Amino acid sequence: MPSCEPLTILHVSQPVDGGVAQVVADLVRGQVADGHAVVVACPCPEGGRLSRDVAASGARLVPWGAERAPGAGLPQELMALRRIVAEARPDLVHLHSSKAGLVGRLAIRSRVATVFQPHAWSFEAVTGPTAKAIARWERWATRWSDRLVCVSESERAHGQAAGLHARWALVPNGVDLHRYDPAALPSRQRARRSLGLSQHAPLAVCVARLCRQKGQDLLLRAWGEVLAELPHARLALVGDGPDRGVLEELAAGLSVPESVVFAGRVEDPRPWYAASDLTVLPSRWEGMALAPLEAMACARPVVLTDVAGAREILGDQQFPVPVGDTRTLATSLVRLLSDLELAADLGRRSRTRTTERHDLRATRMLMGQVYDAVLQSRRVPAPAAPSQAQRRPVKRSD
Image 1 (spheres, one colour):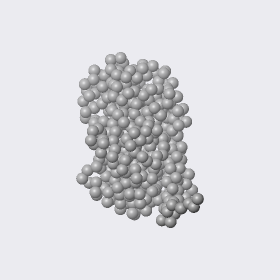
Image 2 (cartoon, rainbow, N blue to C red):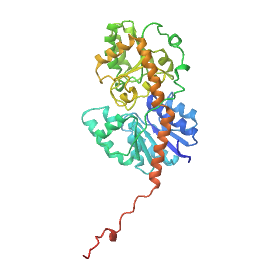
Image 3 (cartoon, rainbow, N blue to C red):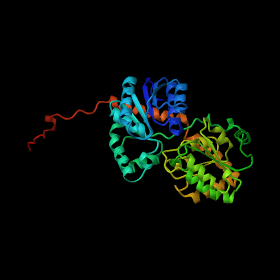
């Protein structure tokens, strides 16, 4: 981080797995290494990856029992977070995702420097009156955010289109290029052997929580069309979540049900990236998804839907698929799975693009600059209001 002065930083996150948790863990690891005192408040269920990563980094973990969605427990969550802030006495609070953004801003109300990072807008997850109500809250709550951090230009544009007038900052997601170095990964053949997969079938992999946002239901509908062209192709869904049962039913109805593998939640997705010919993420909404960047760093091509961040991830090497367009999704998958040389070439270019634009070290530096700007703006006193005498118009004697 750019700041030379050690800070006390409080991160607040409700998600403890998935992309948001990885972003938080990566930031925390770097901030501890830079000499800052870092506290992380999050739910601490058994097996939550964020809890383990925070403990391993040397940061202090504080349990915060928040549910994923607002509910009857909201007042208790708010009071608990107020106690955490009072005990930690942070120089700056960094709120991650919509639930922490809701509770944190209500609890703090600008009494402490506050950075809010939505990691995708919650009003895009719903429709009708609920979406309008959430957007109204977000417009109101910008007054309690010293900076609103977006991970992509398109995420910021969606916020502005919803009427949010904020002090914006742009910090694209980054990945650890050393961790996802293709030279350090097992070969495709070795990875497939370790995972019990066919050595010869073209393989698409989707790494994501099994939920409506990530669009695996759309992927399985498209997969039926892929099998009509490539009956020997295979698809691995890596992750777990509330939609697993529904997705298993959809897979059972395919012409080749065994073509879909449900891998469950994994601690390390790298063997799956190594085993794949391509990765796919047909999300309905995002800020900037992390899993495609990991796959690209592993020199794998990605097929994405045209959500926030997708065009910035892909650049001009490939066009994203319209959201919900299963036919175009199937066509894109067939094109790459039937031409593995093209897929490999796109994968090599993906690694180059990720190296140039999504290095985790650059992400940490940009976030440090955001923190510095927020704290500096709070140190500068606001201009004094003019006195009554200064406001009185001066009479001219012509």
